[in-house]
Length: 204
Image (cartoon, rainbow, N blue to C red):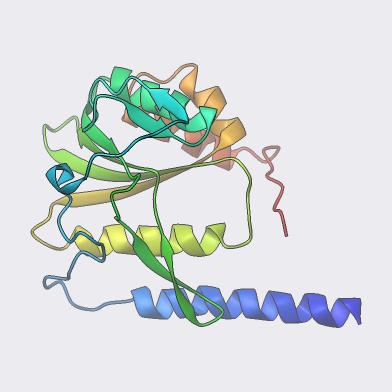
């Protein structure tokens, strides 16, 4: 019975991955809407709110203090403030920006932690969605796939170049000790992904 339930769980996960891939596929390079509320990433639309949790300084952020749910988010915010190639960033808290993904054939909303504007080596500006993650859950792959597809679609529009950064806590904390730019961070995290002895525990 347990094996049957396990097989059914794997089948549903595979279906969800396929569902997201099909919905994310597009042969068009025309304009697509930003799947978010509000539709424009304008922090002027953010209403003032009180925060009693962890705060980061937010030297390059859209607010004078950055609301954080975890110490990992605070560390990442501090990194963005000091990163040489980061122009500005916002913490996606009470802002409403989300990416749609599908789980068990139902639409869900994924709210990436940060959105950052980064100056590339060629001088062009790239917008990054960034997600910091402590506990890994089974829907993480679905969220990551949807965010990656969203960035690829947005990069074909007038809204500029978009990329997605996902960082699991242990790997991110190691990378933050030596990285000084987003480019450094991505390079280090990519190298960690290629390392065969690096593993992650999936919480089911």
